[in-house]
Length: 415
Ligand SMILES: Cc1cc2nc3c(=O)[nH]c(=O)nc-3n(C[C@H](O)[C@H](O)[C@H](O)COP(=O)(O)OP(=O)(O)OC[C@H]3O[C@@H](n4cnc5c(N)ncnc54)[C@H](O)[C@@H]3O)c2cc1C
Image (cartoon, rainbow, N blue to C red):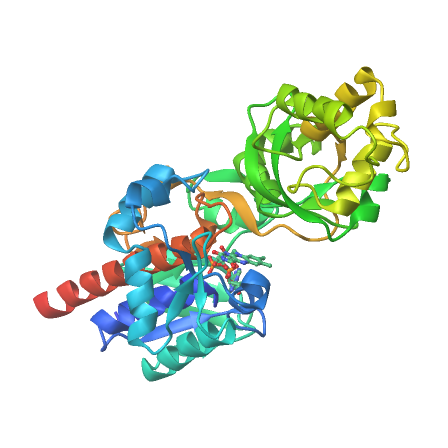
């Protein structure tokens, strides 16, 4: 049979580009097409990491790296044995893009500009002669003898191998065209979202960033790290990590839950109370407005005093012990009510999608449909913040592309 393409990749994001490039490298004679339904390629790469693109993470140990995936830890462990963060760093370096690590492990291009990554991928795709069609969305596909026929918004296309890198979607109905081929889909829910705390005076602290511990009442969820106060509630790595580990639990609670914040994550309530009671004894004439903990920014300190009904101009020796204990409780276990999901479109990834039971981790090929491959966020595997989601796209894309090339070369040279 003659095909329009040997490999047709659906989706012009990180995973789609990486799989097409990986296949082209090992099978340069393969005719590769890439369809993108929108008018833009690599749009998430461009906006990622605040425009800097957090490409991967510096964690070198595969076992530890794979623990950053609330969904798909074991799957990622297998993928990372084939293509891990070191391979990502080398891949981009060999193509002229050096990455650097920040102290928290996040890795960015040294330009600190996502266009370095976008340009690199676009140049490589041009060199590899990948035929890209914009405004061409897959609507459905049929499995035919030794290949596939894809229906798009602009017509039908035949291909020997089909690789789906269509990213995450909010609603189960958006996966229907995959599901109707008998492939299991795990219900999609958002991950990496911020917390919506409506009508709370805390919003006056917008812009305050500090290290905290967050615990979510009636769950086992707890995270320590930076928190940022926004005009709608809370954001920052600790919040995003909580939402990632709790993506399913918090969805079940319809995003109505109570986080408690310890503004001094290294201390417990008794330790904070003891320290504050010492202020009364040793610094009795000092005004309470002068903050006593370096870890609490001044604006936040003033707000916490108000929460404990302590006058800013009052002095420590005038405080009742009960008031001081109340302040210690607010500092270490400050309760909030999250109500509904934020409308600020802060979701970074979808949890859910093509069930990992359906995929062979050695090849990223469907176990039930030969010649059909998956890569990236379309799979039910997602990570916490820190470059783990792009690494999932690079690893699965690289493996899927190499597997296609291997099968193509085997068929070609054995026939
Ligand atoms: C604001 C933001 C910032 C982020 N920052 C980071 C970061 O710094 N580091 C990190 O690791 N992760 C980050 N992420 C997550 C990361 O962007 C994703 O994990 C990654 O882009 C997934 O790549 P993908 O190729 O699988 O999917 P996508 O990037 O979503 O690409 C899928 C593509 O397929 C196209 N498509 C969908 N359906 C069809 C169809 N039927 N036919 C044709 N085309 C179709 C879509 O239009 C899209 O272009 C961020 C996400 C967001 C939203």
